[in-house]
Length: 610
Image 1 (cartoon, helix red, strand yellow):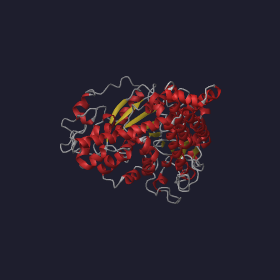
Image 2: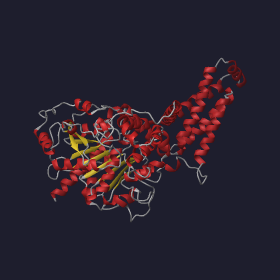
Image 3: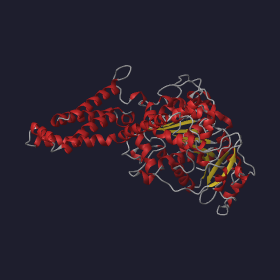
Image 4: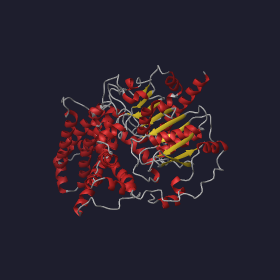
């Protein structure tokens, strides 16, 4: 990133790019928007950065490490949990393939041992002589992998959600029998010991609960929540939206094009980010001053035929540490702009190398910037032209919080949250994400955004002990404790998660249907799209098996404006489609948003015609 205002301004032309290539309707929209194409900081003759605030850029002083030993400990703490998480995650990603392959290999070996004229003792002797050590090594690896991967398929909540426990149980029984025979035949004592430990671990995972009854998938399994669209049929506008929302765009299953060979939320999350790529749409950037004298960017993509005043404007909030260059944002922008919609992506403060002159860096509980941007777009739109907000991941959390807190003052006409959360306090207790995904994400968050962009500002507000804790953070929640909670003055991480949540003002798992908090103030149609196998943002952040957050109850809150679209699979901002996901990219997710936009567009048009 650029670390000085001079470098930042030099990366942009002195004069804004001409709009001559745009259509007249697009230029008219930009003029009505009235925002500068040159960053306001770059227009000031004096340095806009206060002298008493440290400059942007990486950490310059390493005073939190007292000795070289402290640095070594920090590196170990940063690396080891991430390596462990990576290994376990890869095992879980491919367990459903590893288990059958290893079992088939053991079956072939067992069949060969039955048909050969060589006795078991002769085989053992041969083994001891070392003539088949390489083959024995593969047998030993297959024994361990077959039981380990079968245990994962039988006990992991996502595999149980997809296949049920029976499939994994059958695999484990076969793996155990074949491994036992192979270990006896080849005298694989080490493999036998490892498998014994794995089987004890399996027993613990199944019976290690308070009631000592068999439990597959743990207590995080959403086994009583059905997938589908939940909405309040008494709300006529919402019902009209559902009527015009194509069913195929809100149904995720192999029968409707979902990638069948990606069985869990881990795979449905990771694979799309590895294989899906989009070229950048043509954005026109303008700059929007905020209430605290900072600046956010609006990247606007007009349809090929120009801005259409008769079609809704799609207002997008991107994910954490992202922007308009995020691949799934590009996917939505390409698909919807081709249909005639103008797509506007708000770049959050400090992201995509945007400069911040004060102390108020980005955090997930700030909704003022979204409100300021939505109001600016609303003033520029045509009369009664719908403005529809869409948020992804962190952007979904923010847009959910915004529509709940703003109530009737919301500047949007409808909104959709994709892979976000309504009560983020549950993330503090989601052990699976803390163990598997957060150690892999924490270095990117800390190194690129926190320390990489605002290192000196954090050093000035945090004590040496707090900086050391930040550098040794293993989970995203640990980063939140220091980089957000301490830096911004929240009481603790639960207080911060409460403030960033649409439903953070009522007790967790509340059964009081009369006291629903600020979510009951939502005054616009608001759709929540979430996969029950989301590995990063647990389903408990949007639903529960009973109480206020049960989908059937949640859609009845307030005026009935909340809509819940829950899919059994999909992962986090994933929902891969087709046998080769790279060919379809994020089509299903973008079309789900497009279907909602279409529903709102037609429902609004119908209400205007009455």
